[in-house]
Image (cartoon, rainbow, N blue to C red; front, side, top):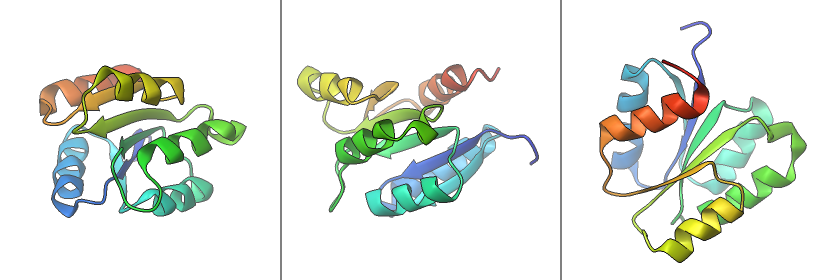
Length: 125
């Protein structure tokens, strides 16, 4: 799929990775998977994606730490970040956005709405 926007999905839960991989591939995106924050940062070094779907609650490096590290590096300024979490309190959402996330989506979420958010952030119709 040449020219497809690239999405890196970062989540420590295999079932969520599989379902998001299927969903985003079906929506026409090129997808790469990372099982934790460290894998995500390695993948960014290799070839920065257009967008990250980033779980907040992960062992070792949580999504907040990963988001903060990404935003400190100007090489990744163009990469959009959508944080995904089961924690929907306003303080957590505010923290994610303050660290540089472009969007913050709480689980469970509508797959249709998530795809719409991603397409909107990437300027895809």
